[in-house]
Amino acid sequence: MWFLTQEGIDRYDGKRIKHYNFSDDSMKLDSRIALNWLYMDSKDVLWVIGQKGRVFQYDSQHDKFELAYVHPELVRNKSQAFLNYGYLDKNDRIWLCYKDSIAWYDIRTGNTLHMPTPINSEIAAIEQTDDNHFFIGTVNGLFYAEVEKGRLNRMSDKAVESIRTSVHELYYHAVSKQLFVGNYKEGILVYDVGKTGKIIPCQLPNNVEINRIVALNDHELLVATGGKGVYKLDVNTCERALYNS
Image 1 (cartoon, one colour):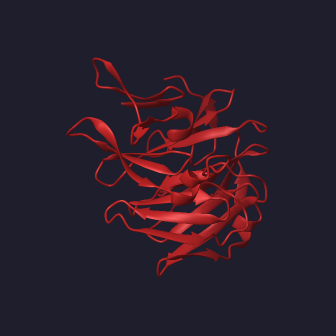
Image 2: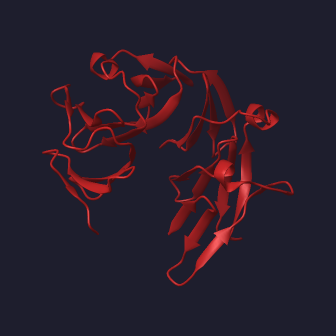
């Protein structure tokens, strides 16, 4: 079990906890900047993305993290250049979102591709629905996009574009084909992609930050909030209850 805290990354193996340090060459890195997003790839390898554009891969054979990629622009700029968001998609491609640009890093080939974003807003959340389609949350709302011929293209979707408040968490429930959208003002909105094409509000507290949405089982989600606890949410009825593990 892996833990990401302000002190860095820890691993619990069932008996003891081990702490890991991160460095770039001989320079020890500040974990608050160097370590921000954790993802498992399709081969169950752990990847770590930092706000300064560093990407680390866990080497299980030697039980340590190796620096795999560095975003050149962010590392050169020593002042206030930080990623808005880091994401690993189902195609084993890491997205490094910085202002109005995206760098794709293919973890299998090591190739990178830099491009401007088709969305005039800073990216705050990404959720993949299939090989080529993505919902993208920004500080100015929600967007729908498609990857075609190595480019990210914005797709028209009136329902999606009706959400114009800041979006900072997304979860796509593949079985019901519903997108759960977390924002501060309205709590959670549910976009029924598969059936009605409508967006409805969910029964969760508003004016609270939605920090994380994950699956509990096939028909329930866990929603972590900033200050109001963790809720269990039924994907079919949107009924919620405080979660006690």
